[in-house]
Image (tube, helix red, strand yellow):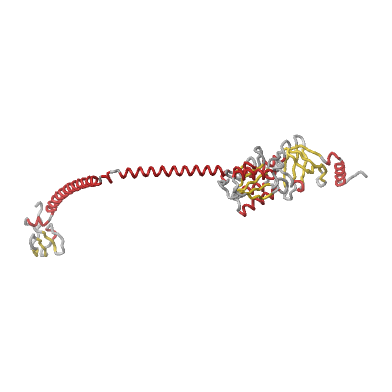
Length: 403
């Protein structure tokens, strides 16, 4: 029974075998990422698999913080690290020091992932880009003080417009310190507001050398700048995320200077052209106004005003005559209507009936008597005649039918 082991002892023994195997101390494994999870502690846990097998893996924060890309499920990678036993679970797993995208560069993956993320936030939208001033009072330059980019910018700017000052904020343009310095430079110019436009750039290089201009902090600082930013990173074929976020992109630092600094000779020619156009326009306007004045001066209003007044007098007389005729017609028509209505009123006037010998009988309270059964014997009545009134007493009331 001497060969009976505890689970712990057996696991430690197997781990010792793994740790002594030099092939397992540093191994490269190609596979597809699955079940990838980044713990709040910064450690990353994942499964690396192929068509037939899988292996658990872990990358501690001390290594994971240097990843340039965001690992995702389904991404094919090459993992480098040590294979050993995780004693608590008694299973072997990979302790990864590196994760490298298989077939695609790590930086290219990181570039596309960050580009997709920032584009979704709208940082590259054209409608948020600012217009450059035609004639800036001063130009800020964020680049290396010793690089060829600065020399190119100075040469082109001074040739085009020597009186526009350039304000240099020296920074490193590659390396770990570069992104922070570039961000600080952009923020300083925005705080001081001593320039009208900022050129951010450097000469060409590999993707590794240009990586500071793909840094998320740099891209966000460019997008947030209230001063227009022109990116001038690399050569024509090189694009960085700073190019997409900037208000204008220049293929080279020299082109950036051409975009930002106007050619003083071209400005003079432009001003001369405007002056000529203005003079021509003024002369044409004055000529047209003179023709109008001349036409008015030769019109009848000024040459024969009495004829114009005579015509208007004749026209007024005609209107007055027509108004008199119309008025007379209206008066005649109204008089005829008045006569007809008067005759109608006369026929309906009760006084006209009284004039023919009739009388109007009514009781003392004013009620009209038209029938004998309305009164009683001895009742006092009033008879209204054409001339005067009679107070009478009913002696007898007799009703007759059919007249």
